[in-house]
Image (tube, rainbow, N blue to C red; front, top):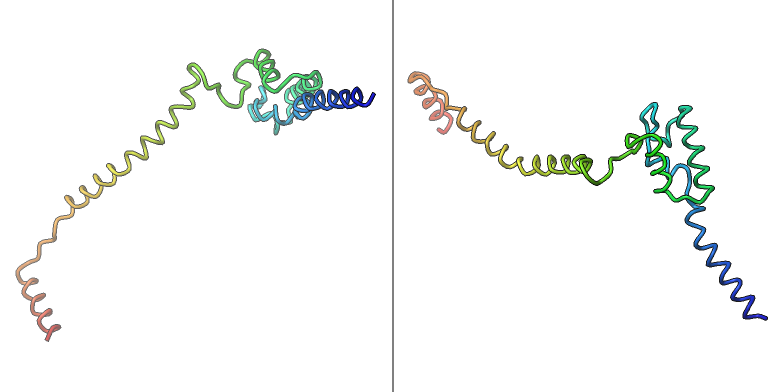
Amino acid sequence: MRPRITAAIAVLFAVLALATPALSLTVNEVAREVRCPTCNTPLDVSNSPAADRMKIFIADRIAKGDDKQEIIDALVVEFGRGVLATPPKSGFDLLAWIVPIVLVVGGLAAIPFVTRAWARRRQDTAPAPEIAPDDAARLDEELRRRDA
């Protein structure tokens, strides 16, 4: 009789362990991934009526056992891709991820070239001032007196 009880308890723990990830999903975890369609702010900070309805929808889907991606997919079907907080990392939307990275790397790579060009331009545009012969003689006289 004891082996059956032990096996039943083991099965019960396995079922609870599998159900825990679905139960641990919260509305705010999903709401961080989407935007309010009316005010275009993250859903977890929005207080608009549409955001409240979306949060209720998310809570209902969590209660039904849907995972995060299924809920987000349902919201995209309902409201379009504009509801996503970040663009998908595929297709044309991949440019939204790649272009900023390329611009930052390109800007960092350009810094040495730009600073060298600025330094060269400063040297080229700063000619030595011309001193009149009278002023040069007076300067030499002053330097001799100082050294003496």
